[in-house]
Amino acid sequence: YNRYELAAALVQKRYELEKNMLRTSLWSGVTAFYDGLIFLAMAHNSTEFEWSSKISNVMSNVKKFEQIGKSNNEHKLLLLEAEINSRIGEKYNALKKYQLAIVAAEKNGFTHEQAIANERAADFFLRNNDKIKASQYYGKANSLYLQWGAQGKADDLCKNIPF
Image (cartoon, one colour):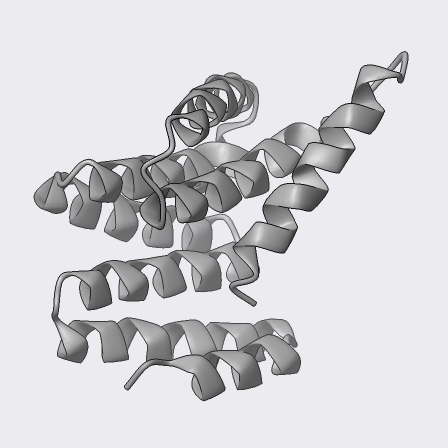
């Protein structure tokens, strides 16, 4: 729901709790993936260096999980790479990675993460002043959220599209 400051604060709390735990839950790269999406969203809105080091740590974890279970993690890695390319201004590479992430998520049955990839691609197009493409990707994301059963997220997306 685009509340990245809150999400980042909650991730930080989880990290603090995990320091005191003998064993942490890795969830096959899922937490690293969502942490990465949060950190990258924060980085888009900030010039703070702290996000870069956190993103680097997340990427190394996601890469490890992608090597262990490609069908479960390939799309996650591709989407994070797309976001990084977008952040550093490599638009062509970003677009290619968004498209690959969407295809990989669909191929492996991750409807919810296919929706996220479409939404992030739409945000990319919006940042690059292409409202037509952004609209197409937001529409696809909305459709996928509904297909997944996330009515609240679909409603929020429609309500908060900035055009």
